[in-house]
Image 1 (tube, one colour):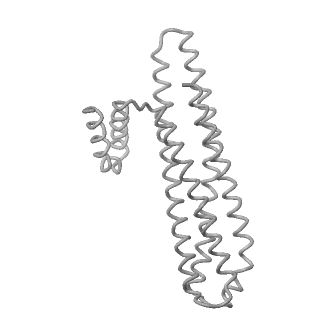
Image 2 (image 1 turned 60 degrees about the horizontal axis):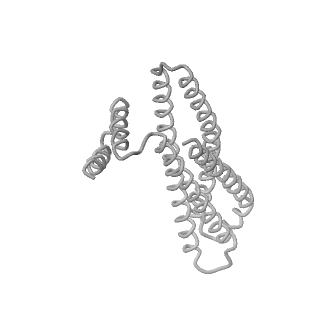
Image 3 (image 1 turned 120 degrees about the vertical axis):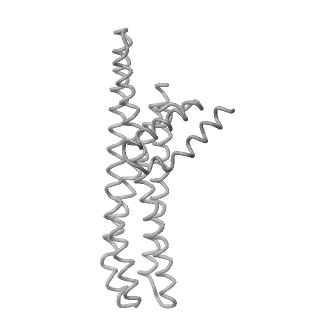
Length: 225
């Protein structure tokens, strides 16, 4: 228990170090990994956790984009009343989607960092092995894991690439409405509605592919334990 508390205290002290220059970031990560190992969490397990987090962040992002799209449709269907309230609701939904998109990107960076460190460590450890059959088996396992990771990572990046274009379209519509809160402005926006809806649907489809790929990667990692 004492070791666990010590390890957690180390983790909590790394916030400042991780924001500094790259050599310090690397040193901070090494300390962080050591702290995790003290409580029984190896890089392999940490990678599964990071992939799991990225999957969950994408699920939340998909929900936020759906909500923003629905709020936009509500504005398009405006028939009278307080248009400002409709705009405020849309703007809030857009801002949530923007924040969640940032969280998705951060979670992907964390996956990439841990994966890179894990594979580097794995490669170095294989280099130190002297028993040829075991060395070959370890290298084969590494290559198989890297291949599975590459497929999963490609799906992550494909969904990430769709985030900003859709956000930019939503932002432009939100800003236009902010500047022109009237029925005529709403009418001029409707022609863009179908396009944005299709873009959101494509984004969510890419996210679903990425989520499924993450689930498969986590399952594969568990099966090889």
